[in-house]
Length: 241
Image (cartoon, rainbow, N blue to C red):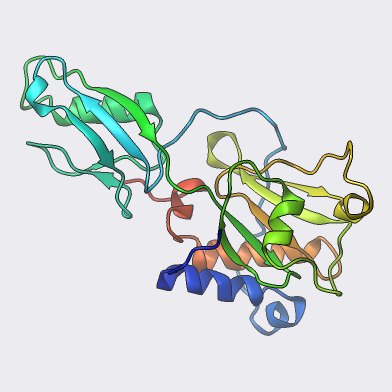
């Protein structure tokens, strides 16, 4: 289901996705902006990291009165707990957030051990751009693959290069990975094909002519639009408190 009330940042992202054609890129070059190097693609499932909208249960065994249930990760990535300043939770693993909260309470408690549990996760957003009917940011309705994401974004334009659709994902260490998928064959017979199941904040980019356009798109994305509702947490974001 598409976001009903997109923020200004999301609207800017959608505009950038639409503007990622070769003609627009040619009119707005990025002198001095280095090419993005991609990590090798891996299907390894990374350790879960928190994002805005996630809900967390937090307990402090030595101070039960500080326990909180249903703590929501706010749009700025932080959570609020008693006695301490807001703590950055976005892009932290469970162990990392526990360690951050333990340090935060070290000046308040003799035994500041903190236990964090995931209660629920927020909407799993994906980004679909390029030669599709309605580029933008979409909420994933459960498990979804790259072809379903394109269909959700209005399907292919007649100018789309459907046999070289680009998937970009956060890899180990936060570095972006890129691969392509042939959705032209999938449109004829999807049985047995690798349609690339998507993860949170994956980017599906449908080029007009060749894969080189994806590099131009990503240069513009990382330079101008990366802080989009948590995407800065997904790939190389600023996690400072």
